[in-house]
Length: 415
Image (cartoon, rainbow, N blue to C red; front, top):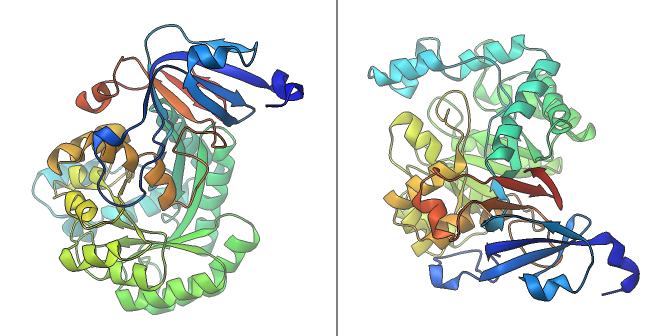
């Protein structure tokens, strides 16, 4: 370590317990015994980067700068939520009431609810309003320990309103310390006011929207919803292939209610296939043999009263697994990633190591963010502190214990 750099370095701690999430495989099962746990720990930070982690007493001699932490805390890397729809206006509480009365997701859509209801309200909102709503929700997530948040468009469904949404996401990012990762989901559904076919709509997006998104730097990722009432696998192949030609990275809503999306995701090299509640042994095997990251969305299962993605089978087959909140106004209104991860962990018999990996470094890998999700030298200094002595308390309490302190890029943002 260069002495000339010492004035830029600070030690944060001490922490009762620290989980680095280092040294773990990106794919396949994990046991709790594989977790690296450091007791009486400190984190040495230089700017926004982790310089070292280890015993607090040993690190104390390396710098005079100390950010003292009082109390007993367990530290994890900042959580990563790799699939959200937090840019929206309006409410779908009426949809939820209908669902509790026995109407299906598709029934509600045909009765004027569903995605189109949110599209109507989002189109009516100004870009400033959407930016404020997005940053407000992002800051709520930040307080829950989520330091990186993927955010989709998809409630505009025409060129002007999709650009407005993506601009609002960019503007909203300026009012939160969380990192927002924008994704263009203009291929959410075909809008009711578009007169052509699904194929016509996708060609319209390729011709009129995607070049502008790219040239304005509004998003580098494109997603499509493959399912009944949305787009077919064949339509998605065309759209994603054209998006890839324009330089976009790909993600897919796959196997929520019907099959076919996983095959498209693997064929076209998507970064992730998200949902997977309807995935069978065939899809799981395909995913395990690919570089596509499976992303489970337990919030949608809880919101719809449906089964969870087969997370245990996915891991046992040798695939990776990320868990995301899917926070949206319709099917997943909860937005509490830690609670959702705790619950799917119980039902799918996931180890604590597998669940924590799914919301830290494996979630980061689903977004191809290789600089976060692990506390080791050279990684972003994103970390969170829970008021407990043992990491097992975190998932055991199923969201009942939330982080009290959050550091983003080496700076305390929630104290």
